[in-house]
Image (tube, rainbow, N blue to C red; front, side, top):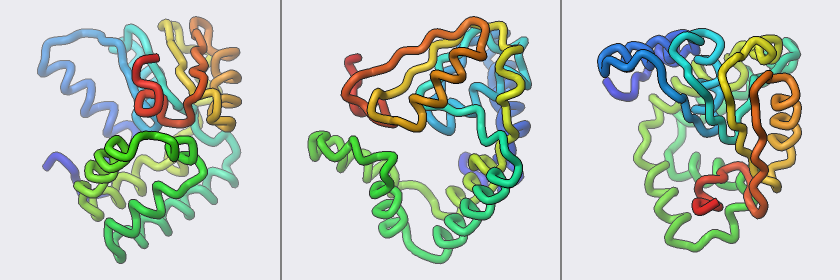
Length: 200
């Protein structure tokens, strides 16, 4: 199944193992791992959990997770409540609530066809699979990778939107702690840099 409905299938170690298995199937020994937001967190995790398979990292709007255990548990509980509402409700209301998050406020100026295409893509997801992903791979379930940043030896490009204040702060700190990281701050962009400023 391409979108499992069991949270354990989305645990960090399981997802990284699936991706390294894919590399094996394609007979690729190492690759540059590219990820946006949650995908960036997965790619960063691969840099630590499967470093021999990672030639480099391109991380857009990514985070090493939540260092504080109490805060991480609070986020896990919050994510679980969102997952419950997702399963009990409908995709239309979930997507509308998701798109209204302050994290995506900078997308309000995008052309209507782009926003409508993004909404259609989001509405194609299955609620149970999304809920399982949130329960297994949400920020509250992610191990904190902060202590491991200094051990990442591969080159890394950190991409973040200038208007994404939280992630700009996080990525500046990440760039300081990662031995071979470059930070690219994209003006006029928020969290979803590739959608908001595709040319840049």
